[in-house]
Image 1 (cartoon, rainbow, N blue to C red):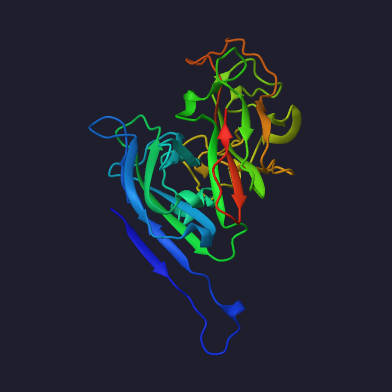
Image 2 (cartoon, rainbow, N blue to C red; image 1 turned 30 degrees about the vertical axis):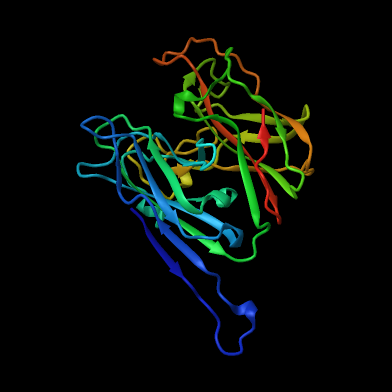
Length: 334
């Protein structure tokens, strides 16, 4: 079920075309979809929606996520949540946004809701689009989730985009890469770029979870609390750095919350969008390949935490995005 509203603003008379207002497509997808655990409820909602939009005309695409409390109140904890889109050709589920639920309150203070720029996925936001909304909630109270898209026509940087998965270890908070211990998750890939790529970038979302030890000198356990800098290597050279540090939890407009919301986590906050880390390569590598590696800051888990779960995790997804003014194939990742 969907509702699509197209609002067109146009100039009249002899006004210069520069005064024309953009065409904005507002597309409602999930509307108060119940996410809960037990009592016949599900953590996941999945549905197909119609996006009557020509992506080559889209200059910006934004997604708004509104959380409301079901009867009886919202869930009490800060939980991992995300939105995925199914690629129509590969049927892979692509993480397009991640957020953390607030402690027991809605996000009405954010007006339209959490906002995530999803322009990188505009080539897939057309026609029949299959979406999946997930909240890692472990109670029968849960959340009512509504998601709207706003696609604005204009002068895009490039008409054609294509995207492919590099890493996707983000099925849930503890489904990420174990930190500080041996694991079999692959963090090195070889990426081949189409010959007509004019721009190539990497889009990463990463959040740390767990209260593992040893703690940092300031008493912060890993990986929810320990501040770190992780590196992205291109052809064995450190090219980008991802700071997993404070982002201002105490200034979050979704407040007060009914829990420990104000102290800074490592790169995320309760009741807020998870940051999207966009890294544009100085060389698009058109028609060539490059080696990619994601490298965590060195740290070794001693498994001496008093927490029930002795591990630390990084839930991470990385996608390679290529752009062109000609139709373009998606990259190949091995």
